[in-house]
Amino acid sequence: MPARSASSRHRSARRPRTALDDLVTLSADGVSQAGRRSFAVAAASGLALGLAAAPSFADHPRDSAGSIGGVDTDAATAAARAVIDARVVTAPADATWTFDSPVVTAVAPPPPPPPVEVRSAPAASRTQERRATAPAAAQAAEPAPAVEVPASAAGSAVVEIAMRYIGVPYLSGGTTPDGFDCSGFTSYVYAQVGITLPRTSSQQRYAGTVVSRADAQPGDLIWSPGHVAIYAGGDMQVDAPRPGKTIQLREIWQSSPVFIRLS
Image (cartoon, rainbow, N blue to C red; front, side):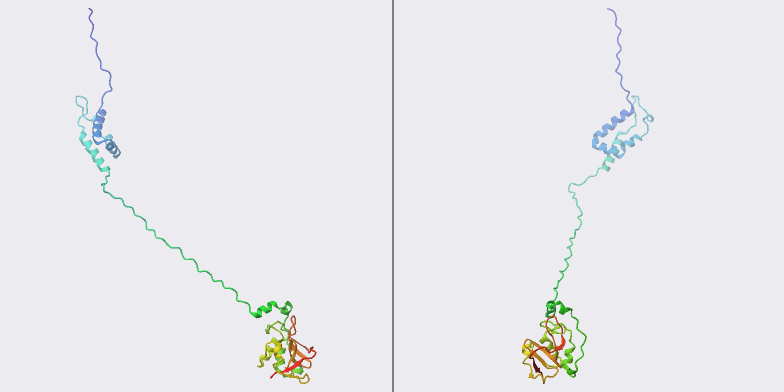
């Protein structure tokens, strides 16, 4: 039988083991003891940078097996734990949380302004109402210049006063210089010499003594049904004729007037 030569056995080729492999193995053992979470904190804290800044493994002596001697894994693990303990924040189980609440003050709105009192216009006086109802022609009439007292009435205070109001418009119910009716005019004039007359012409008919026309004197009343005037002498009289007219000196127009003397 022919002799066979023994075939040589060779180990499969492997990547050579370096000092970095040994360091990774040692670090893995330390990290497994502290937990994955601790390792993450250690890496974030700069431990990895510290290892990277360590002296080159080429400077360390190697033993006969090719491993790096003099690496203190316990010290590295203790340093990592110290960093972890410094970085981890813990709180007691009975801790309480408080929040400062801002102080809110309610302010009431200002009160509404007081209501404004609205006052109605004062009621028009009776004289103003009469003016409003008087004919436009009478209201527009201006008092005429004072007429000279006739010679026949010289010395009569009543006639002199009556002549002052010539030109004042006739106003039904009027008793003032704003406007007169016939009896309102005679009452106003005689009141200025101290003689009070009734308000209406029918009442004034009996206010004095009846005298004849021949005996009549300036200042006597001249009465006729529905009208009254003041005698000015010489067939003249002063009176308030009718609506639309003014106080005037004119001739006696009544057919049979009654002359009344007042005292």
